[in-house]
Image 1 (cartoon, rainbow, N blue to C red):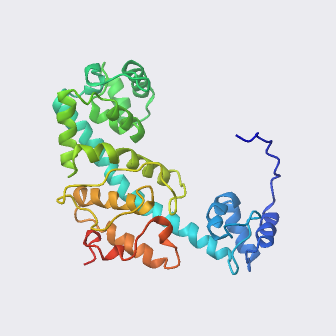
Image 2: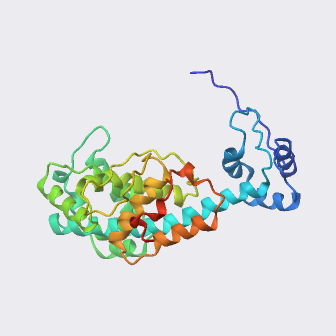
Image 3: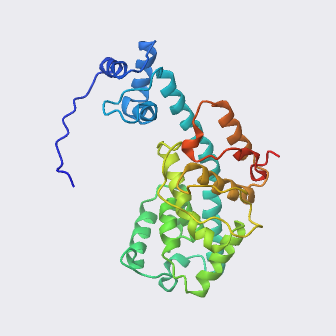
Length: 308
């Protein structure tokens, strides 16, 4: 590993930022307009999109010939609109996961199933007693009206259908994945949850973390469009589960993740126009190189996307 060095790059004024972009070969015909976007988006955030428009072998971050400031903005705008569209679907999927998990485990193991240590398997990554301590702190400090009402009315922890509404999806995922897979109550509840989503338990376990990842990227305004995502999830084997007829390719690219989202949307909200809106979004941005996102040729002709 190379020796670390001190960070000594100075902060640049907006005028200096524009000069730097111009010196790197970017056409900036309207400095005032560029200054507006650099102030309200930031040079660093826009530079993330600018990199794909630079000469790949250049160590000086030189832009490809003919690249304009608007080309950078187009990538940024597309990514923003893509995140908003994905977040719209993720919100529905997340709500379905919260509600279904709370319901099925409550029916199978009682309203406070999360407090039952026999349903969990402790490991070096998870300790049920410590988790309960975190949950109790959350319940005592939550500013949600329904949690405050529960504290003032009852002398016990809230039922899971209240708790999951106060937890982050990451906290729910941690509880869900650290349950004892060999416990019959857990196995039965997981089966019912997966079945309600139209997928087997294998896919539920494989898709949960990628959905959380997508949610966090979109919620925190991260770059999505050409990102290499960290989870490589399983794909359906059962022909009765809606899925594309072609190979999705690299399952760490955005296209594969969008297929997963649409597969869940077909079950959760079968009358949704989400896939149509995705196709319209890409049609509104014909210059975006969607091959970087893993889209194959003729992808929208597949019956899965509902355009036939």
